[in-house]
Length: 121
Image 1: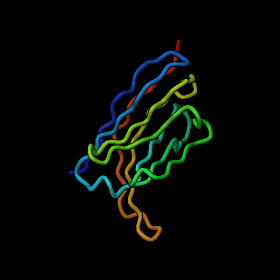
Image 2: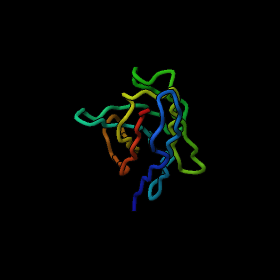
Image 3: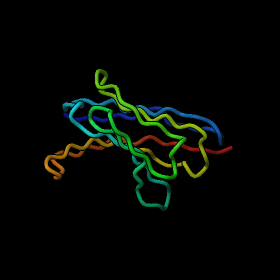
């Protein structure tokens, strides 16, 4: 069965860093675009970062550009989100997403259970 298991969340002070990991299983990881989303209390879900199946292209939300880096290791079926210079407004539950599209249509869409990131002094 498909599994996306996030880890690495926690409590960190403003200006600190965290590295999130998402371990995938049950599907052909290297064929999927991987993304990190987040949902803060009382807010809509937000796309944070995306990386293509080969890792050749990445995109970021304006709010995290220059601070967060998404990467993947297809040999380990894992995607990462390195978060630096964290701010209180980065506090949210972070979700890993795997998506495969064919001719512009979403064919498969998987989600992890989320990991809490809290930025507070």
